[in-house]
Image (cartoon, rainbow, N blue to C red):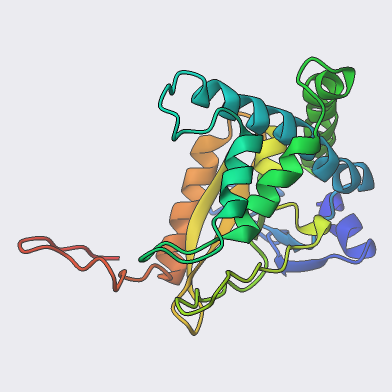
Length: 249
């Protein structure tokens, strides 16, 4: 209970207060019921290191895995490397039937060409030590404040509609580093995504529940309780039920 009070002193707001929980069979006991505190702030080292570590690892692995994938393809129409695939894509400047150029995607791929090889000390340090640094710092946050889960917006920006008549795709604004939408990826901790309804454009949005290692049963219980309490799941308009099917949400 002192942790809840200290969180309030640090500026957090107690959304659901379980400090007055009562148990009928043990009226003299002191119990802490379900408590929700907002916000929970990640330490600066997590915010600052996560994007750099993931980029160092991702650039190397994506580039080299593409080359491994392309290697067995003998037909001359297939590229042999990520660099060759980008070069061919950049030459595709005019629409062909329903196919349109998509320079934004290949600009992101092009950025992958600058990463160090997977044999470099930078890559090894990021993968073997950087991930552990971020994961253990997050686990310390769970332990220090006795948290069962951290709940956050999976992607804290509004999704955009795709304009089929646009000549090129428009990039979506990137979330701030503080959102840590990839926290489950870098920490390798269980991270459960649940439907949270839709925007006014009927585009899906979701929230995530992340917990310490082996907390999957608890996360599933929290997510199920959230679904039952909010009833935010909607029937997809583009994939209606088939004859004889019935889905209830």
